[in-house]
Image 1 (tube, rainbow, N blue to C red):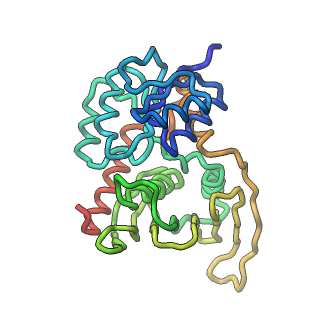
Image 2 (cartoon, rainbow, N blue to C red; image 1 turned 90 degrees about the vertical axis):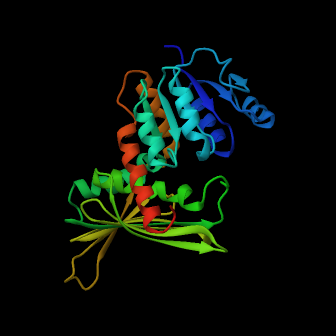
Length: 302
């Protein structure tokens, strides 16, 4: 079988990671980027063709969009007119109006890249919940904090919080409903948020770009214990015990260290080959956007 031809739109910091994984998985990659230095880097890293615009592109099997979020709405619509599947980086779009408008287009073969939904550690937590190893699910808490953000076209909340909303969606099987949000500011700019949502249990996320050390944590609390995934690692800490337990019993669960981005991109290539759809469909992406917009509105970020 000949390799699938993927049009990669954008080859910035994250786009280069996508290019690397596409090539690892055997795809034929055509890169589109208006910046000459980005095109040069793409060529140096194995791109099979580079273009300044999408117009001259040869036939492709699908597109992956990795450009600044502020450009997504226009670019997604442009790409959908080619009649091919589109896999776009998060955040999907920045307004609910744009999300609903895209839903009305003739081609809605669109999926959103929420990489944490593919993370082996998140899948391990999901299995712990499904297997009832910590009893009744009562709460999920996440922290996603670091110092500053490399993305400048949107604030830190747009950059960080979509990860956590997608994690809640993956672990509970439903997009959470927004309940409460409080924004953290620095010199008048939003740099973080405490977000409370509900997806059959309380789902609480803290995101911030005012932490001197990078912090990543997912905690799944149940009536008979809890499970914790720390950092981006491949180890889940499990603690067994209920409210009557004096001390919990700790065990550790090793999970695969296969890169989540590779698993995510592999799912798109499998879809192009007639397989199952990637995890976040357009319908679900709209609801995740709705949750994010409602949280931002509650926090005064209209």
